[in-house]
Image (cartoon, rainbow, N blue to C red):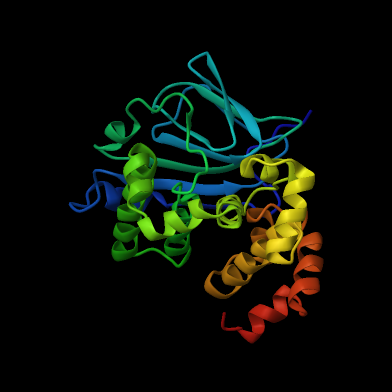
Amino acid sequence: MARIETGFPGERFVVLPQPFLDLMEDDPLTGDLYIHSLGHIAHALHHHVSRPDGCPQYVFLYCTWGRGEVVVDQRRFALSANQYMILPAGVPHVYRADDNDPWTLYWVLFAGAKAAIYAKGMAEPREVLPSVQSRIEQRTDLFETIYSVLCGGFSIDKLDYANIVLAHFLASFLYVDLFRESTSPAASVKYVDNMVGRVTHFMAENVESNLTLHQIASYAGYSESYFYRRFIKETGYAPIDYFIHLKINKASIFLIKTSMTVAQIAAKLGFNSPDYFSRTFRRIVGISATEFRRQNFRL
């Protein structure tokens, strides 16, 4: 079976040229923690990365859907949805997607004098599960900020800003409770107080995933049939239809505010193919995704 490291539909990545890496290493503002490269792959069947001699940088892996296996210095770990880990620099490792349920993965290679501090104790999978305070969507937005800044060309200001956001992004995992507690108390109460609020928040936190009715009903604490009837009664939408509308709303924002291609947006939001995404977008919005972007709709 063919195993590949890159080239997946909708894949995104940025690798910084060596001259800029040299500049960052000597930068007094962010030289102690800086990005080497980063990327995102979705439903990456046959994804396989092998580094028998390790990697000079630390390797951050965040799985948001599916699962895979990570081998670090002959120690094996399962890495599944809502889990992350940081592979130590200079240590042999392999990571690969599961054949039956391939993962969706955010990854960052980073270095600097403080890199080891951020990576300390993170060499085994840790969970960041959805909750009314989890802020998963805000965390991935930090990644998108870094990616967007670096895709716009390189300058010292852009590199510094991206590296400062990287520190915040990593801190959202290392200090997960503080990151969650810093959300608005009023917003949390809104989600806790009613079933629809909790469920729609759960959907928004998992907008890049392919939630099933069973998973959503289980989160709500009801049987599928009762939950389905109650959700329609209170919202006017079937649960999965509502979830798809959330995905399309998020896609509309990406079309206006980012330079991601339609294929990249489709992959990020968990659609099986760009064609299926395009058909769904046209059915809900009334025009194609390409036309929506061309008209620069204001949301």
